[in-house]
Structure formats: C-alpha cells, structure tokens
Length: 468
Image 1: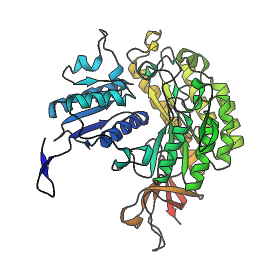
Image 2: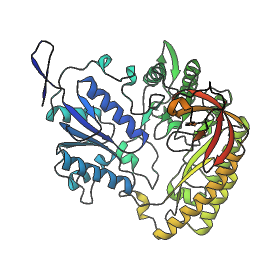
Image 3: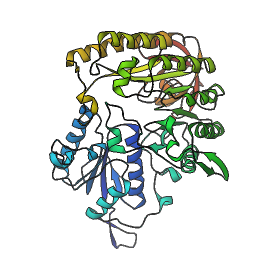
Image 4: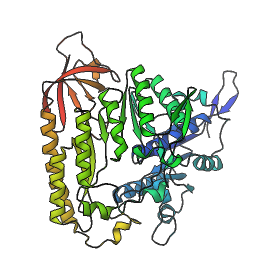
C-alpha cells in the first residue's frame, strides 16, 4: 500500500482501493450501491477499474445464459488483471451440475463468494483481505445522499428498491432460489430513503423490486410509522406518500415490476391525479391461458385485457411497458398467434421479447415440447415486428402535442439540442426524446431539469421535439 505525506511531514498510509464492477438489473445495482456506501463509510477508496486496486468486487447476474457468461468472463478478467477477487450477486448463489458452487467451480482462485443482497458478508470478506482503515461514519461519506448512501445512477434519477425476493414460482425463473421469498422493507425506511433522494436533487424516482404490487404481503400490510404518522406497508399507501413527496420537489415517481393484481386498480387514480407517473411496467410474459399455466403465471390474457381497459378508462394517458417470452416449451403456432393478437388488442406501448432460453435449475426445462432455436428466434423476430408497429402507431399520436421532458444530455447548454425522456420513457429500456436546438437564443437546456417541448416527428422508437 502506498503512503502519502501529511502537512506536518509524517507519512500516512493511503486509503486502500477497492475495484468494483456491477452487472445485471437495477435490483443488482441497488445492492452495489449499498456495498459501495459501506466501503466509503469505512474509508476505502473505490474504483471502476482493476488497475491499482487492492482487491476487486464483482457483483454478478445469473438469470440467463448470456448474463452468466458475461459474469464469469468478468470474474476471469479481474483475476487475470488483479488476482484478488470477491464475487457477490445472483450468480454467487448458483450451483454447478455437480452441486458445488458454480463460481468456485469455474474460478477456484476467487477469495470469497456470496449470494445477492449480502452487504455484510461482502464487507466481512473485504475486512479479511484488506483491513478497514477506520471506523465508519456515514455522514462523512463523499458523494453520499444522506441515508440513501451512494448512487451509481446520474444525479437526477435513482432506483428505490422496496423489497427483496419473490413468492412466485414461475417455471422459467430461478430468482427465488437466488434471492429467496418476498421480504418487504419497512415503509418508514423506504420513505426516509426517498426523502433523502429528493432532497439530494433527484427528479425521477424509479420504484423497483421483484414484485412491486406484492409489497407488504409478507408482513400482512403491517402499519408502520413515518414522520410520526401511521402508514400501511402496502403498494397504494407507498405510492401515495411518494407522490406527495415528489409533488413537493417537482419530481417524478415511476413504478416498475407491477403484476396485474386487482388492487393495482386503486393506484391508477393516483396517476390520473398527477401524483405518480401514468406508467406501469407489467411483466405479462404471454397471453394464452395454456402457456401461462405452463409458466405458472398468476394471470391470464383475457383478465389482463379487461384490466388494461379499466386502467385506460381511469387514466387515458397511462403508458404500459411489458416483457414477453416467445418459443416457450410446448408453444404452438396457434398459441403464438394468440399472443400476437393480444399485443395488437392490448396496444402495449413498449414491449420487449426474449426467445425462450433454458436456465439451469428452472422447472420449465423438464416440460415437453422444447422448440428448436431457429423457431424460437423466428417467433421473437415476428413478435418484435408487431410490437414495433403498435409502438410507432401510438407514438405517431403524440406528434403536435406538448410534453414535459426530463433532460438527460445537453452539450453546450443544449444550444445544439439534447436528449431527454417523457413520462412514457424509463431510462435505458424505453425510447428517448431527441431535442432539437431551441429556436430562441435565450432558451437553454440543463441535465436533470425539465423542459417543455413540442413533438414534431417520430424516429423509430424515439420522438423528435422542439424545446419551447
């Protein structure tokens, strides 16, 4: 470890440096933020590179084959370039064919392996190999946002994780085996973190979990306390409180991973009132009742259509994004055509699709009727062609409208234009609003601030708009 000179001339050891790589979904990102916050609280320096680090932490994803490969490759790179590696995250909880830990099987030289949401286990491993420089004082953490800690997102938006795990046992999924059953965070803790984020300048709060609409089920919707008042541990109550807080700060609240349960209908009026964004990320996965049954999904296509109609009656501006799986074992051409018909009738604003991929440990692997790779990919391509037609048709309806846009990029104060997002666009997964250079010389754009813009054209999945 290198040393630095103090003003008085006495050398002092430089803070140990921990390299950090975060892979996977927003839920894994929030795990990374917790670990980074604790590292900085204890006086460690952190780095995005392996070079010069005393140790490297790799937060992995283990959900699909491509993610497993990326995680294992990254661990290998870290071992080759640094040699001292701690592995955490979903892949850390995954077993190889012989029952031993997969990461240790492939990379036996790693120092330690933990599963997801294991901040203390990771810190214990760090302490073993790189002793901490001083005792933790959270309020001294550079870049921390109060009780919200360090965030890896841009300053103007942040993810708020409200629970861990999932009670569903979908046949294609292994997340419960890695992250466990649903465990809801105390509502007071969630609201305190939200307040800290808004007070730090966050203009968009993205609520995430494995199943946001199940928030509080595990504690029977227990009444908690926040700011001296009772608040139920329930999706509606959480959304209402977050919406009121966001209104005070002129910010957005966006809901992700919402299953289409009947009680979600109660939340939609909050969108119509402008408290939270009229946007729902709903993982439908399929529409045909037989496929949904094989998937062990808690809904069916007809009920989902009825629910979408009801939501749009309450809040006509609502935007729905969803993900689907094409080529699930046993899926017939008729069942796939049913899915395409659902997509058109439901008018899903933003739809993504995966060709079914077998995942080690998933019950769906044992289902009969596995489809060839080329059929799965062909159906995914057909799905996306229809999804694009639906999405672009809905985007075309926005031409001529004036929308509020949150600016994500604005070189030279936006004099040459910029890039932002409307309420219909979540970061990184949806489209964007490409902002043209303003006509007025006095008009400027600033990252993290809102601007009003008139939609003038559609380009693919994006809108083109003129700031006004």
